[in-house]
Image (cartoon, rainbow, N blue to C red):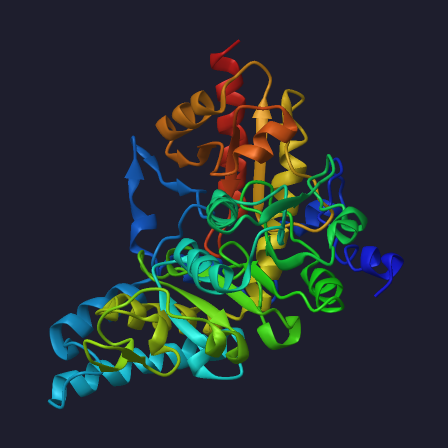
Length: 437
């Protein structure tokens, strides 16, 4: 792919960063067949009041709330089917194993992986990236080799590579971003070198909402035989992900951001890489045979799943992606894009507000600052009004440094949020400004 076509790959969706007008305000409607009121009934936690106000939960980029289907699944398995997996011949163990491996197949289908053994259960995106760093990285990289990331990464896609560089003598390279929060693709391509051994980038930024041109990135890297890892923690809950179509080598995601339980996630890896990689940890279930002289490792994916796994939460994660697929990821993406457009239009009505992250293609995240008001104060006052947002550096300190701010306030939207909640948020922001004069 040449540089022009690679850059053109970015310009695929407009997130409408302009002042409100009669035409654009028509976005305050759900796509045909999308019944948000009915969906909200599936989330018991949303029915409560906080500080005497109806809860407005806008912290979905940090973690999402759980539908009744997921909550019921956890209870049902513990009450009826729970036992350890892969190790027992009794009925409960067989039931638990069938449910656990069935969840793996659901995740395979959710990502359109070629094989179920390309799905490795981990604790979340952080562990998935560390697994690749310590298995693929330590067995492959040597002094002078390079890893290429971007300037918009979460700490979980920075620190493991820094640790790996300290261990191997490799170097970490960082592709820059522009003032809109978009990757400078030409600069990224320039940084690909004969020493680049891995590219690791976020599919969608948690701090800015930027959706990276990952297909273009993968094509550029693969043209030089460089494997690519995608941090999909933010992208997977908001859009359809097809790892075969993307042709990524690794894809990491977290269950708790995907309307599933905390403490479980997956690493997708192409079979050829997982077969070649050494185990990440040693212990039970990742072995085929052990003597005091040597150990023969188990087949995929069990080679990377040492010890008793997070059985019930993995099963419930399968239920979570089933729930999402009944709604439809494309429908969710379209609805959330309308929420983002509307929230952007309303935010731009406030002169004291600056949006941080105005990429042309972005997900349902609105990061902002207010003149002379610290984001922590914004978050605290909004909480008194029953509005839950995030305030801080969002585990992306280099992003804050780039924009010259200590932190941002971040409202992030999910499939159950409403246009009315955005109006409540905007009214709340105006009250914050009033409080500070």
